[in-house]
Length: 112
Image (cartoon, rainbow, N blue to C red; front, side, top):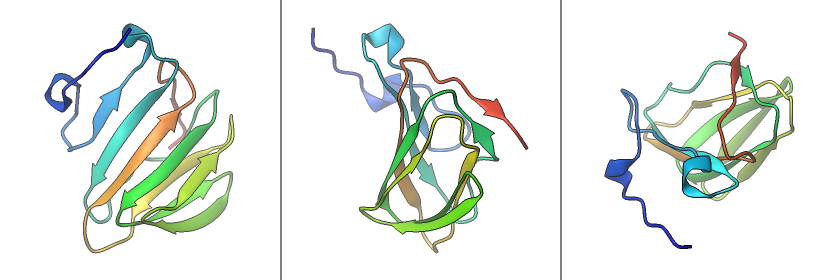
């Protein structure tokens, strides 16, 4: 089965970030396509599965299991299953990252 979903068909909040949950579409993964302004990022949270980030543009500070990691375009950061994590745009322009969740549904517990 093949499926095309237009960006305009996917839910987004007040930001430019797009959320995709795979389960309704027959996919085994979910993701956020993040498009954050300087200073923006989620609060500390955890998932019962790993999360993999690929920085598409910009710079960010990623915190995973207490360790801070600076990452830029082309870098990949992985947070292990159950590791508390967050990120923040530390650059002067937009931070665009693909946040891949190893789950057909996004399951998140906020810690902050």
